[in-house]
Amino acid sequence: RGRMSIMENHTTSPGEWMSLHRSAILIVDDDPGVRDVVARCLQREHYRVLVADGIVEARKQLAQEDVIIALVDITLANGECGLDLLEEVHRSRPDVDVIMMTANSDVTSAVDALQKGAYDYLCKPFPFQVLAAAVKRAVDRNRFAERAQLLDQIDAQRAASEEHLQQFLMSLASVIDAKSRFTSQHSRRVSGLSRL
Image (tube, rainbow, N blue to C red; front, side, top):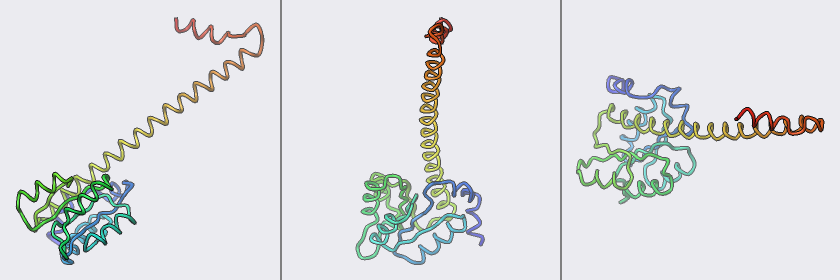
């Protein structure tokens, strides 16, 4: 309880998390103990969590679920390497932020992971507040990207609406002008004089 409560000050509120279009965090680790602890920690903070013990299961989860963040161990069972999954996700799902986890604190592996597209890199055992901060940064980045995309869509709709309104007003002016041969083109002349 004491360790988990540390995260409460560093994560998003449930409402903020649920506002994201994609809402799952995928944990890929061959150690069931690590998967369980990390999953419970994130679930307490209202994240929807998926787990996989290797690359094959991770691929299934990525194909079937809306995943926003993947926490991937570098060294997996049966000779699998999390860096291979990282490269695959980076190519096929660039919208998913991958945070690498490892018990190896070698700087070279960290640099290699970051060069291959990892969003962040955590050395095991990591304090829960470090995990929480890394996940929060990724969530905030995704929330910002989605809001920016939404604003772009709103701007495009507003521009389209303004164009439709202008076309409607021009049509209305043409109908009014066509009413009588004496008022023909009157609206256009008034408009031109107003601009002058």
